[in-house]
Image (cartoon, rainbow, N blue to C red; front, side, top):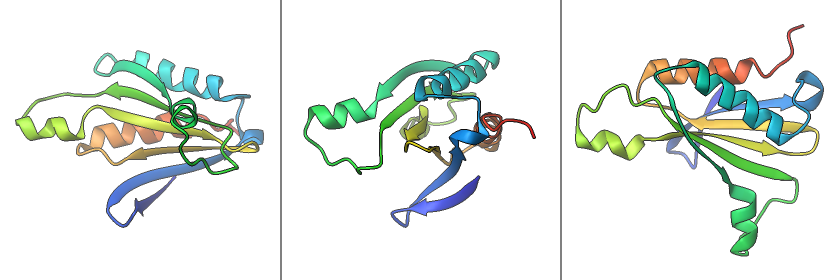
Length: 130
């Protein structure tokens, strides 16, 4: 995984995983992988799947030609509510884009380290063990 700044201000983690490196044959299998990881953690709550590609097509938005699928898996770690402003960075989501020969997995850096560690670990386990 690499960490980058999207639009020079959003800290984002990104992993590109070739389809030949994973047992996930389609975007639904990738979503199922993350849903399973979320379900395994009693402190994480699954919220929904948002089909970003379908939404963008429906409103006539611009879509990069290589994107064949694009979904967000929405969930919340929410270990604490230390102040009302923390709601601005919750819930979390992991984006999954299908580019034909590979998946691009991305998520914004969370304000708490355990959440970042979990999302990185979940993403790493998409790759088939060598």
